[in-house]
Image 1 (cartoon, rainbow, N blue to C red):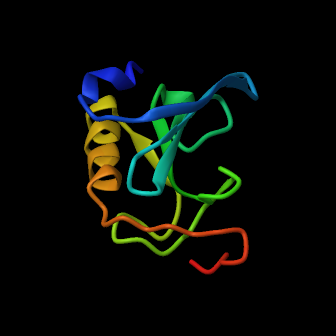
Image 2: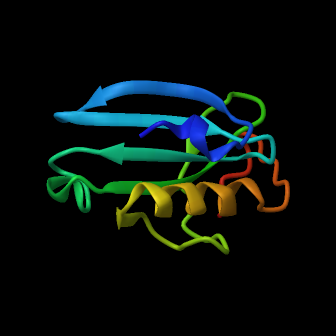
Length: 107
């Protein structure tokens, strides 16, 4: 999927092969980001669909984790079309700014 088509501003953190598929990790300016994956072992990957997880970045280390408690979702979203991925990325991009540091790992 061409994430540039979303028109959103983001930084690509990783773009790599993953378990026979591909993962792209992006970071938005609000402290959140997303992992977009498609492959044989992802939710919907065998049907050519995508999986998206909301990420929260640590401002000190640039490490990320899955917060599992956002207005977008409380889990990984699977079986998404390209249009659904674009809508989900927009929702994540539009979340209020949230900054965490290595000492704060609460969701």
